[in-house]
Length: 483
Picture (cartoon, rainbow, N blue to C red):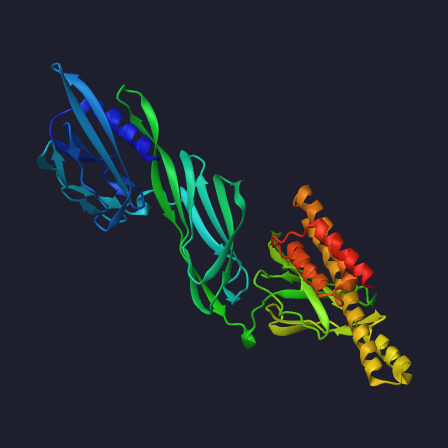
């Protein structure tokens, strides 16, 4: 019951009982263990200072509120204040006397003894609650399905059912789906499901599960009508104990996994991209999985963040982990094998998955060209000329690969940034064309190299480096004349 509703009920009953002094009363006595008790303190006066109550006995006060009533008596106004407190005792307790200050005078309430009776005083089959798991033993990281089932008898006037979050330690927990409701004989069943992933070995406790139930209680209002007000009770299950075993060999993955690695194309021209994809399919938790950085000598590697998807269907928690790479090289290379190790709890053994190495053939690679050029230049008479040819070749080669890389990066950038706004796209598109026109000259001109660097920073790093078109065209004319 909300605190507002409780106050309204107290106010209606208090209209008939205006009187001097300070009084304290409870809505029901005795009560069943787990049911809430509402304590009302009433006082008449213009200014009333009620006590702050954090605990009653050993029990926390869970709700409080206040209200002001006014009536006219003998041509004068009489003000009555009501302060309401709520707590849930599990055993008999005495509400102590509390001090109330009314118009500067200190007054005290009388103590009240609350008789708390056991749950057996209520029909034991009115409400049933169970906390269940699909296994009693598990490995660290292995999924454990936990279900809370609460059953209410159909002839009980239940107004609301509220599931309290389950208490736990050393678990990673995920709730799955919505609350299910269905009929089972004379009961209405409420069911919610969780996935528990133990994070350490040992004997771990889950729960207990707690449900708060509002039962309609009949009471008479100030006008003599029978009204229904909610009365909250608490229903508690027994806790679960789970025996958690450590994974062998310091493994992190548990479940059933499959590894797929693919690279396309496997024959490319120098400087052209190779697309590599790695996909891991899992029956189990894969949200914390990752691979070490990919490094291949002589290969430029670009990668996106991994894409992770998890799902729960028909009692199985599964998912996929996928990562994509772009590889650019000017010579043949081999993509090394990828591997992962995991523990299969069904077979109770360590499994290892490993992909095959993938050989990528690069046509027109730089090493082949260099050997060919060295054979052609072997008859050159002077060392000076040979050095000059090597320098020119190296410069051209650098310009070629920088240009190819720039063209690739620009195309990738367009794919990623095409949605960022038409105006900015057009600006960067012009900058990208300027960068492409500069590529043949960056090894021959410091000015061209500097401008290319500024354009690269503007396009790919988002730096606010603006290149005037007139300056660019003037430099291009100078570069063309110097050829």
